[in-house]
Image (cartoon, rainbow, N blue to C red; front, side, top):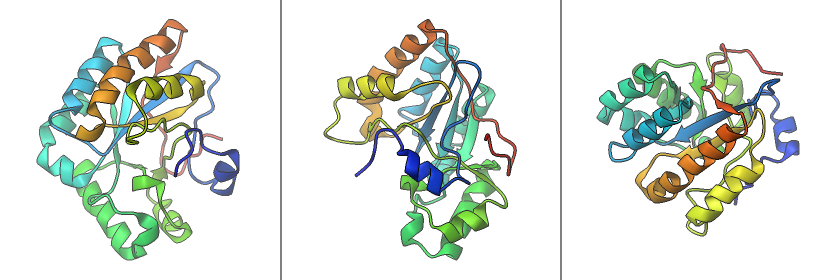
Length: 211
C-alpha cells in the first residue's frame, strides 16, 4: 500500500526527513530511484536534456558498479546522484548495522551526502545514525509507476494532479517501469515547463533542513 501524495501526518511525525522543499519560485524536484539501468537511464537523460531539466538519481550500488559510465553521464549532464543503498534493503526489516554498512558500501562508489531508503522503509534508530552523514530525502508525490494496476495514462494524470511548487516526485528507472515512464515523463515536463516551472536537482548541504 502507498499514498500517491504523502500524508501530512507522516511528514510531521518524521520531521527530520526531507519530504518537500518549500520554494518561493516555481521549482519542482524530479527524482529517479533504482538505477542506473543501461537500457533505460540513458533515454531518461536524453529526455531531460531535451527539456533542459535537472533531476536527482538515487542509485543502487550494485547497479552503479555495473554501469559506472552511466553514473558519469548523469554527473556530467549536471544532475545529482544520491545513495539508494548497495543491495536495495528494507531498513525496517534489516539489522541497523547491516543496513548502515550496506549504505556505506554504496557510498564508496557514489560519494554523496544524499540518501533515500529503498521502499521508504527506515527505523528511527537508523535515521538517527544516518543523519550524522546524510540528508535523508523522501518524497511528497509517488505516482506509482511500479504499480501493475497503474496505466501509463493514470501515471501521467497522477503526476500532474499532485505536483506543485517545491514537490519532490519520484519515478523509477528500471525495466519494469520503462514503458510507462517514457510515455509520461516528456508530457509531465512539457506541462509544467509551459506553466513557467523549472526542474532542479536537490542540492542541500548535509544536516541542513529546508524548513
